[in-house]
Length: 131
Image 1 (cartoon, rainbow, N blue to C red):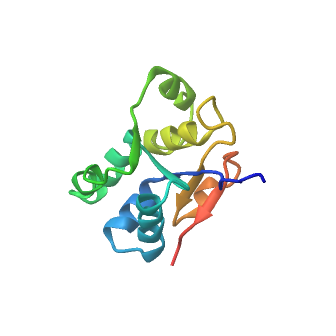
Image 2: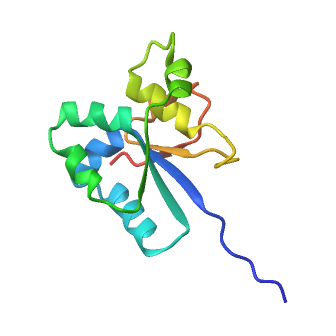
């Protein structure tokens, strides 16, 4: 008898999803609840996107920092080099960088956003949580 375990779903909250969380978006809240209740969801946040969100709504970073189920990704040299020449914000570029497939996440991470049009042609998978 073989037992199958559900695969882990990696998602990364973009600046808009972080702002939506602070505004009470039920879909983002459910994702966070699911990640706290099971090991089936892993939530990631690029720190440059968190800084962008906090600049728009002061207090978002402090709120998100209290959530222990989130994996925070510092802005490293590889992310800065990936952002070089991008017309988008550093937070957007950092989120895209973290969402890309890599050794820790071979399939990459889905970008959770309320503004899916911003991710057209970005080469990442999207999870639209717009109301």
